Image (cartoon, rainbow over all chains, first blue to last red; front, side, top):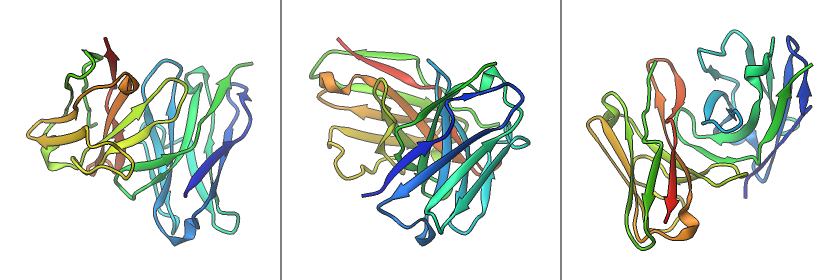
Amino acid sequence: QVQLQESGPGLVRPSETLSLTCAVSGYSISNGYSWGWIRQPPGKGLEWIGSISHSGSTYYNPSLRSRVTISIDTSKNQFSLRLSSVTAADTAVYFCARHMTRNWVAPWGQGTLVTVSS
Amino acid sequence: SYVLTQPPSVSVAPGQTARITCGGNNIGSKSVHWYQQKPGQAPVLVVYDDSDRPSGIPERFSGSNSGNTATLTISRVEAGDEADYYCQVWDSSSDRGVFGTGTKVTVL
């Protein structure tokens, strides 16, 4: 059974870079699928951030493209998110998930709250 | 950019049928997926590719998609179905995932 777990700082200062890692267990990410990030501001809806295939091809939300980098480390069976120049508007619960390439998303990690504040 | 519009809320009595719509331009030409999110939890996929159910999802959850509207139908609604529901598609014109605005289902 595939399981995903996000990790990273819960507090990031404005203008700095948010960095999160998603550890995958129960499945080797080099075997296939894509792996993605989705966020949810407090009390609001879901926003798709981007995804990366097992071979390293990336897709990003155009509204975040200039600030987002998603990378994959098959040796550690994990993938990562970097979001630069953060502001309070980037405060959200960040979910990592398995992503059928260019299609549905499942399963999801439990999510981690990242607050942008000085 | 591609926009998916859902009603903010739907209320339904136990045992009745809830229908949640997801509107988008020519959405019938895309594959639509639906997620259930309960408070404080991660979303769970309940319908994919318009009308297929992942293993473990009750047959009470079904989907359809045609024209400019996709619909998630929950039959014989139970108290445990109370949650937020989101539709999602892949927008091939911008190569990105898109989520709907979300619908809160309240069981009366």
